[in-house]
Length: 318
Image (cartoon, rainbow, N blue to C red; front, top):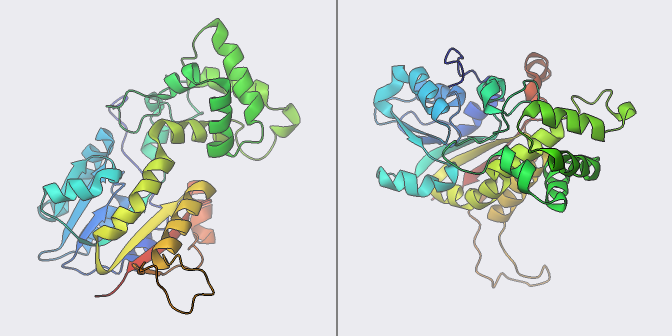
């Protein structure tokens, strides 16, 4: 766990708004699919009584260990599972749970992961290129940067980082690795810096931010996981149950928005048909027509909250 002294801290973004929208029943069953430091989970667990139960899933062993400590006061009603939320339905079936009353997904990288230099998530520290959320997987940032073709790197950096200099950055990465493989975040920083015109590097945050985000998303297949999970998570909800998803960039938000809309209105009939004949039935309704954003105060106190958006879907009542 790096130097072993670091605490798994994660200031939970949109915490009150999420808890409010979960509409917690004290005896209900709740799932936190991205447990992290258990910021949301501990607030949920604190509101449960009797048969109430919280299940937390995270693929990061450090997160599971830290969350376990934080949730100790509620341990008799908490179950922790080390897995990716894409497997939530199967993981819950194994412990005899087929439906839940609410689900939270907070898609942000925890502060601990960013601040633990050894994990290679951050451009602030010189560390080995890693970025794996689950260190049991083989694909890491190092392989992506050294083995992907220039066009594949360009696509990843352009699409997942929304980086306007993606083409140049990909070109510089490929040129640099001809001499020797890239090993550290520091080397990647230097390459990115050289690929972005000096006048464009002032303002707008650190020049590496977008590229690091892109490599991390690719390494952990974050958008594919999100896309392929939402329908199944809605399927897990009991009637009236709610799914709360917090996203941190436009690509994630777009996926959530369109999935929620599709689940609310799956009818494929042409608009001029007098009645629906496709047989596709709504699974519930979107509670948030517009996403819920952090307050000015929260954004001032936690700079990572700036791009956060919360969207909520409610399963159809029985």
